[in-house]
Length: 86
Image (cartoon, rainbow, N blue to C red; front, side):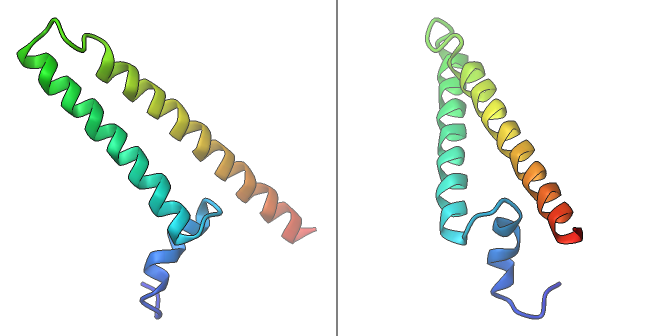
């Protein structure tokens, strides 16, 4: 655990080259999309003729976006490590 409690809010965002505020906006927007997909799935459970593919489509899109973002962050981290060792 870090000595400075403020790093609890900045360490992880820094791993994806973001400030706390940028990470908050990104994570919140993805969380809201997940909640939307969940609501669509619950409505679909009761009324199967509604939102037949909405939840699965939203989750596939989110998974793709987040996977691409993770891959970019890992590449940037690896590039930075190579630059630092040069």
